[in-house]
Amino acid sequence: MVLTVSDIKQFVYCRRVVYFTYNLPIRRPTTYKMEEGKLEHDHVASLEERRSLKAYGIGEGEREFNVSLFSPRLGLSGKLDMVIKSGGEVIPVDFKNSGGGVELNHKYQLTAYALLVEDRWNRPVRRGFIYLVPQKKAQEVAITPNMRLFVHRVLADAREMIETEAMPPATRQKQHCRDCEFRNFCNEE
Ligand code: SF4
Image 1: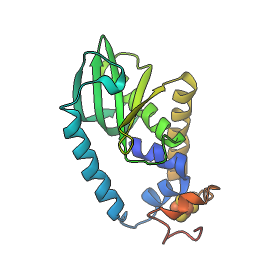
Image 2 (image 1 turned 90 degrees about the horizontal axis):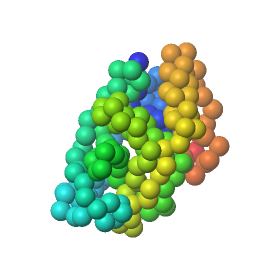
Image 3 (image 1 turned 135 degrees about the horizontal axis):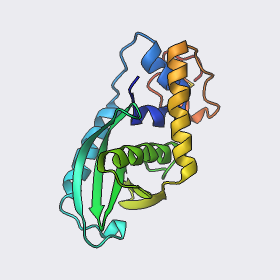
């Protein structure tokens, strides 16, 4: 079963979001916030094309935007906002429209992109960046062995959950329910 990088992010946020996405015959609601997020991503990508790589502490490099990635080995796909190729390194960059800074699920999402980038370019990825759009700031994230292991575990757990159709418990972080697009299907808000 092919999962997406976004599934990894959602699974860490709340397992039930992934359950609703795959196990319930409902159309995933497209919220105003999601539409706005996409427009903002496209806008940032067009601005980034004209900027230097100074925000990333990198002198020279080549950039690719909206890179579609797929690994049959991992059963994982995703569309990465930007890749920087510099001095033999290939570095994944994810744009985030989050005023609250970098969260744990964002780091695991970036790790999943790093695994896909490694498969595509056949080079080890030791770091990536999360570009925080509101703050116009790039935060470097080290891609550690433990983070890689965690992503592999999430992939296995998510597949098992989907295959067994076992509804997982709700997130214990109730603040996540406030902005959740599935809150109308879930009695946990
Ligand atoms: S409403 Fe809360 S518990 Fe339910 S799916 Fe959304 S985040 Fe998870």
